[in-house]
Image (cartoon, rainbow over all chains, first blue to last red; front, side, top):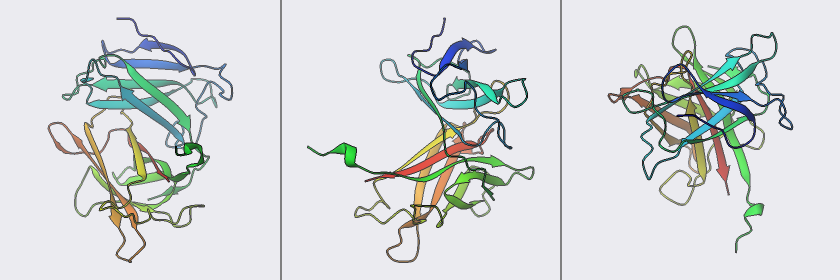
Length: 118
Length: 136
């Protein structure tokens, strides 16, 4: 089933290597106030200030999604940072699957920080 | 009708938790002065000590009037997967606010617990993002 993105900040969404529940979203270089990439930062890569919220949409009630993994794929160009956000959704036994009616996604970057404690 | 535009939105914590080579949790961000595992529990349970030095933050979730530490506190956690694609391994997440023994201080620590399936405590494979904020 084809996937599509409705909103702002992503240029495209395509499926990843898994048959379902694997989505690669490419950031939009044209979005106002957005360079089209998650800034390259110090470890842990790509930038510890990035936050993503993913919320599956149920159909009609349950989404069937139990686990969500988010990752950021770094551009091969030095210093560019991550240009893609990668989302994987699975059921409760970690078999990748599409949420029944898609998912909401919000990506934002917090204040510059780089402080580290342990 | 309430004027919701006048409500405050107070950031308390924002950061990323990862794990060092020894498997110890590391907090990268603001609002937390220390992170540790819970006693001898080897995975999936973390205590985050709020940072008393954060601007605009007292280093504690103020005590509320309900049995909860404070009903106005919100926490968002997103687990990062490991590898490409970023396969997740966490199916449940829970947070709690641990009260300071000092009267009137409120909660100065946040407890985060995660489980995999079959249900067992587990660390998220790629770490987790956490945002804590307070509304009025």
